[in-house]
Amino acid sequence: MNWKRLTAEFIVIFLGVTASFVAEDWREVRDDRRAELSALEQIHDELVADSIDLANVRPGLRRHRRSAAWIRSVESRLDVPRDSVAAALRTLAYHVQYQPRRATLQSLQATGGLGLVSDDMLRRDILRYYEEEQAKVFHFRAEHNELATRLYETWWLHVRHRSRQDPETPLTDPPPTVEFVGSWRDLRADARILNWIAGVGTIAGITSDYIDDQIELNVALRQRIRAVLEEG
Image (cartoon, rainbow, N blue to C red; front, side):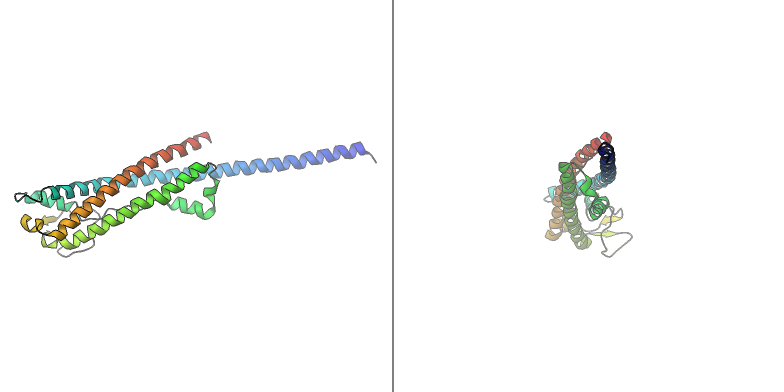
């Protein structure tokens, strides 16, 4: 028996099998990296869309806060111009629309794709943004809209629409046809409507502040993801 030949053949076979395992591992690492970068790219794009939605919602909330604060600041006066009251009321009783963007996260969670993000801290912060920060703004947006609904349901002694005379679901944009038809004296004596106005303004301010924080976190998270994407 030619031991040298058998040894040489064994070495060749061993090296071939080892090389195939190494090549397979390398392909898996490469494929996982590609999948990770694809997942991060999708998350980055969704964060961009979410930040745009948040930026579009914020001005309406700030108008609500300013209008409510103005009405409360002139509450003790008797000489408030009717047009000024109408302008302030016009901004208050409508819903602010914000639906968190999270389809990508849900898809990645369902397929296990989120687990491909190799940076544990980055993966944790992505989840924190979606599960905590988005949920916080959505919660206060819902509370704000509930108060706006209550205001809308109670203000009919004082305002009317040229185009609609009965209470309906609050509009999603400031109603341009709102007219202040009551008296300022009666409005300022209506504790219910003043409470709803104050509530709308307070929650609008809180939600706006949370949106500021969320946009800041959004931008920081996108920068970290972009840095990983640029590394390739």
